[in-house]
Structures are given as structure tokens and as C-alpha cells.
Image 1 (cartoon, rainbow, N blue to C red):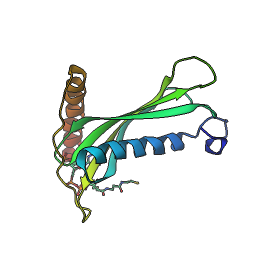
Image 2: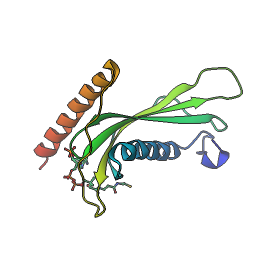
Image 3: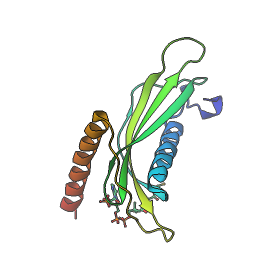
Length: 142
Ligand SMILES: CC(C)(COP(=O)(O)OP(=O)(O)OC[C@H]1O[C@@H](n2cnc3c(N)ncnc32)[C@H](O)[C@@H]1OP(=O)(O)O)[C@@H](O)C(=O)NCCC(=O)NCCS
């Protein structure tokens, strides 16, 4: 993280990290859908620890749930001081809902998610519950 990304406290500006997370979610979703995607929603974005200037930052993005045209991506951000041997810490987490688009910018169906291990199945079930709750909320607000 370069000084140009600092906020007035001298740590990394939250918006810079959110942009990285959005990019990571977009790449993971586009790889799955094999199409372009847009961000429709962000849930449970949490800043667990500040990220310091000079630290190495790594974003991990994993599809957790797939609906018909939407995908939920869990993004984890790790921060590491490369000058010592301390382990990287989990600094931020968030769930991004990405929607697949066709060439005309219309939402488009995505392939199902292949679940290999128990952890993936658990994440999928949790994602499904959030998806159902969102749909119910949307219907109530209509
Ligand atoms: C996201 C967007 C493409 C959805 O378009 P839409 O015409 O409402 O699409 P649909 O009604 O066909 O819905 C497609 C899927 O997106 C999901 N979706 C749409 N809006 C959503 C929202 N706000 N939150 C979560 N999911 C949403 C729907 O639930 C549906 O999921 P499913 O097919 O898996 O059940 C449209 O609202 C859009 O372009 N938004 C702006 C996105 C953008 O510019 N992002 C970048 C921000 S800088």
C-alpha cells in the first residue's frame, strides 16, 4: 500500500480497499459467468482492522452462492507486514452480489456452482438464506 492511498489518519483509505474488493469480486464472478458483470449489492462489509501504509494487501474472492442471474462473492482482505514474520491478518470481509450481463447489458443466466467440499456447501446454504431474505425484503418494499 503506497502513501498515495492514505487517509488523514495515515492508514489506508477504506474506499481504496473497497475498490480492490469490488474488483476482486468482479473478476471471480466474471470467471464463473464468462460474461461481464456488475455489482448490485454489498452486504456485511466489515473493517476488522486498519491497514497500514507499507503493508502488503491480498484480496481473496470466492463464489459462495449462485441464483439464476446473480452470484454472491465473499471477499476477504488480508494485510501483512512484510518486514516481520507475523502472519497476515484478516482485515476486511464482505459479500458482493454480482449480476451477469449479456452484450446488450441485460441480466443473463449464470451456470450453477459446483460444490466440492463441506465448507463450500455450508457457505452456499448461508448464501441461499441471505438470497431468500433479500428477495422477501424486496417484495415487502414493493
Ligand atoms: C444489477 C442490475 C443489472 C439488475 O438489473 P435487473 O433488471 O433488476 O435484473 P433482474 O431483475 O433480471 O435481476 C437479476 C438478478 O439480480 C438480482 N438483483 C438485482 N438487483 C439486486 C440488488 N439490488 N441486490 C441483490 N440482488 C439484486 C436479482 O435478485 C436477480 O437475481 P437472480 O436472477 O439470481 O434471482 C441493475 O439494477 C443495474 O444495472 N444496476 C446498476 C449496477 C451498477 O451500475 N453497478 C456498478 C456500481 S458503480
